[in-house]
Length: 318
Ligand code: UT7
Image (cartoon, rainbow, N blue to C red; front, side, top):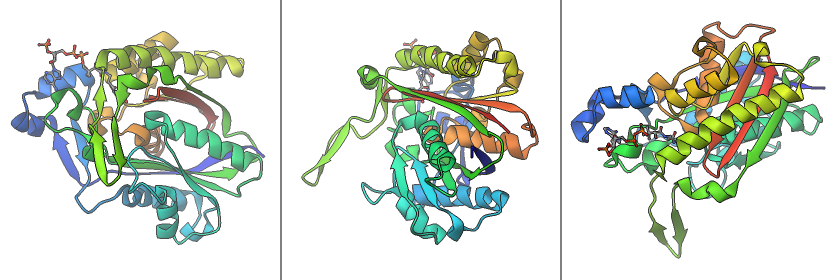
């Protein structure tokens, strides 16, 4: 039995931080951020909110759309780079908050590609019968790993969560997935901190070489989407909607151009969400499903890239 996405959900913390608000605190401007990145605002979690809270708030509407209760959930995979704590996994904390138990639950750490990795794994577990159903969540609170005085990074990211529920289906929802990593590029995007012997050593904030990340992202996003098309013997004309990782509108535009797709076929939530890392693709998917853009029978290409470096695509029929 193939697996299909039976429900989507999303959650954004209440507090919205606009570019104008950032410009009051650091040497930047709405004009610079909007033209260089496409971002106009991002959401920031409240002090008491944890990643598992965001994950739960995204999971509940996804479960409702799939006709499941929290206690019905079997497999839970949470993609996150900002877990509640070192352990237990955010997936186990989410399982408890959902009132589920007994099924497998674990986190996936593939930074901004995390949701693509998690979805690919969960698809195979549901399709093979190893799991009855799966809740796959991308959830992040990047606001806590940003140096808010560094204008080169803090303007880019936001907090949020997106979720999907996978059920076995009669026809393929998820058609194929393609995952890659190349650890030799690990230093161009990292949070180079360690916790040992009760102390944090190294910088516990996002650091990056923006130009190198930009070039790498454009190259591999287009390549991994092409790989999915080739594997299925179709061309880019088969893509109704492209949902790439939401990092920079110029990266998304260049990826679409390389694929020969107009920007009108790309789902863009970056302007309102910023880069929410592993949450960006499921959040964008949820928006496009709920506003009626993605319709039954249409083909959707999800493509992610992130620190590691990691990248991957999932090609599916809605
Ligand atoms: O999930 C992946 C996460 N990472 C990414 O997606 C990053 C990918 N890279 C990018 O999106 C872009 O490289 C950036 C948005 C980070 C930077 O855009 P850019 O067009 O490559 O700008 P730049 O780094 O070449 O900087 C141009 C100027 C510099 O000033 P000088 O040296 O020309 O005087 C920067 O200091 O812009 C300055 N600058 C800013 N100015 C106002 C950098 N950040 C800001 C800022 N506001 N926030």
